[in-house]
View 1 (tube, rainbow, N blue to C red):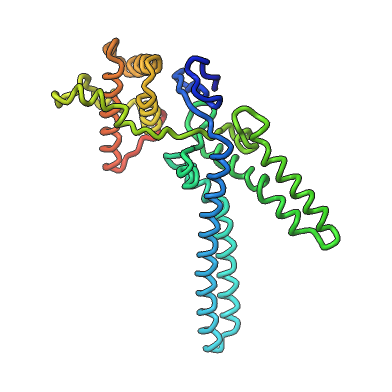
View 2 (view 1 turned 120 degrees about the vertical axis):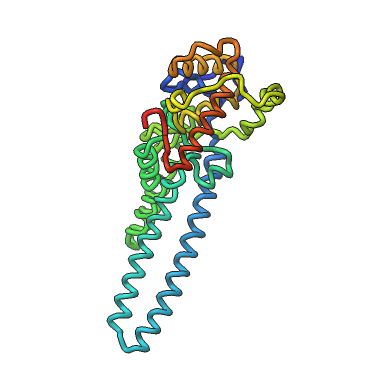
Length: 304
């Protein structure tokens, strides 16, 4: 669920307020059309480079292998090897075109290299965790949006080439202009998947926490201590959400999140010291999750 940011807090027409499943309001900014287009072109450039390098590598292997087979007089073996390499090439091209986006968007950053360079990422519109189904849906639609027009053109004969080009161009424009027809800059894949693309905050959490750290520099012990049981209630997804709340540093969000966490873990302290409570919980939860990862255990979220 998402709503508009109150006028007094809005910095940009693209500002929104995202309501998480636990009722926490997080301010976000929808990515601009220019940033999304730039990220896509960069990703397509990276994919093209990977495809070219793979093609050259497999071609070199093919020619070298064929020479050895023909020198040995094994023509059938050479043809079989060539067919095998051709199948590998087809699989590699398919994976670069599809698995590239799936692999990076399912990662912890929710962003491909192009999106990271553009400072944007994919997020779930309902405030929950970005799921495998969402990422698959939005990327399958990309084939329909971008690559189907080329199929029209490639499959047309000489007599129908002009009509195929017009049909392909019209199809491409319909989907390319989709973000201009809705306020959240959603492409068709985002609408189907329930996702959107938002700006990735550039300010580091450490900078946002610097004042608190300086105030507590004289003491090595945090103001609040949490047991392992209290920390094990949450996982990596909740840690990322808490990090974002601390980075934004909005009083109303800090109070709401502190009350939510305290109620979840059965604590009654922290009132009036919400920032210190959340700073301590964030640092100790992060240390707890990192320690578990070193032992080969991962907790993706509170449901794991």
